[in-house]
Length: 381
Image (cartoon, rainbow, N blue to C red; front, top):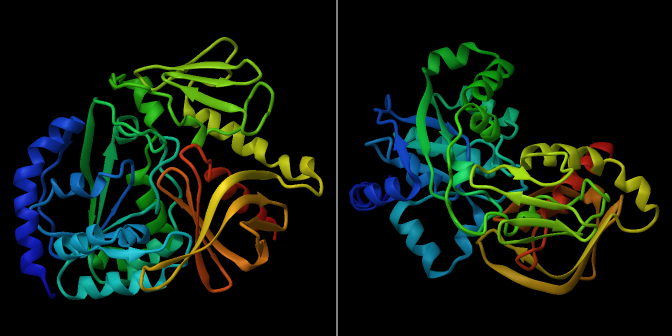
């Protein structure tokens, strides 16, 4: 593969220079293991630093499938490609081209890692595993390795601006030969991957509490939690330092174990609150009538092109109805939207009518509520 010697050299330098600093910063303990030849590695995803941390477990070069938006960072993107040549995938798309690129790397004797959820965890739990991942594992002809992070969500919650200092670990959960994988039906491979990578950060905390020290624990929590359990208000929640409030009077304190406390608060953690708001969300379309279920101002709409360039299409407001999304004056029927995802804390990636778009807002814009509503409405459609 072109540039592979350079990638190996850069990786060795980074591993020895950055490795000790990363271990200290994250309290990270990597399991050291040898890869059994070219492998397809599936891992859960807890922080933006996971590729660098996972690499500390292996002496061999590992290539990563990465979100397409990192290829739109100008000079920094070109540097990343030159240094490590990641494989691009636009979130919210089918990803057939990505699968083909992974197969090509494996045939060239390279190991490739995919963060199997396609996204960092929102609530401390491992997300769903796509059947397409199991099919790729079965057809690629390489060994399958499952790798699990623990402690990462509370070290760097997706919605937070700053890291917290605690404990984090990465370990090999399973190594499966190509022959063994080919003998399994797809649903059995799905269960195997799910069993190996399933994680609940809060259940782990209850069993073995760890302090995660930092500052402003609750800030930007409103980018993941958007419905108040007291008044059912949407967009009425706001954070301040370690505190989380609603205009109705709800008060919650986020502590250094990652739990929430407050008078009358029905949930003591983000995951439980998220479960409740996901169920409550099912009632909102009917309650909204002919009006928008969600709406926000101050957003920007861009079109994303295959060469990773982008074009600003407009700015203004976003509104989501039960049958369409209206954004910066553009109208997208939900029947034409075949994929939606969120990268970072709050930027929406969307595919519609064979075109790809990005919707970005301010620091406290909650893109996730649009994603969850889209998932629910799309199932009905």
